[in-house]
Image (cartoon, rainbow, N blue to C red):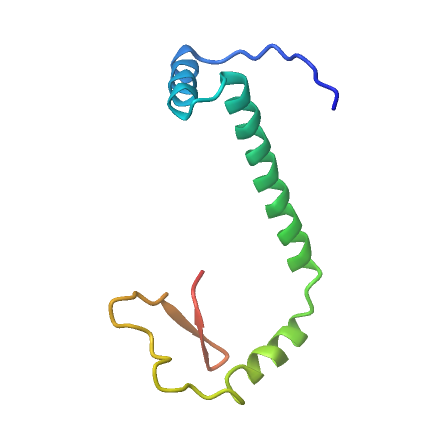
Length: 101
């Protein structure tokens, strides 16, 4: 793998925090910054990927799939959601409840 150098200008407070974090993690500052940058790039690309997939979605197929959910697999005893777990708020759309995101 080819490596290259890049002069990075950071605010002193950010640099100090990065140094502290690198030390607490037991890694070199360069490694910390490299991993942080790689994670950020990955997160952005993942978001772009799912946004593209959503643009290509066939919503009529999705609706047909959602209409079949739960029709053949009835809940069994013990499938209940424990009362100490909060459920996502729901909204009604086209006469069907949907969880808010």
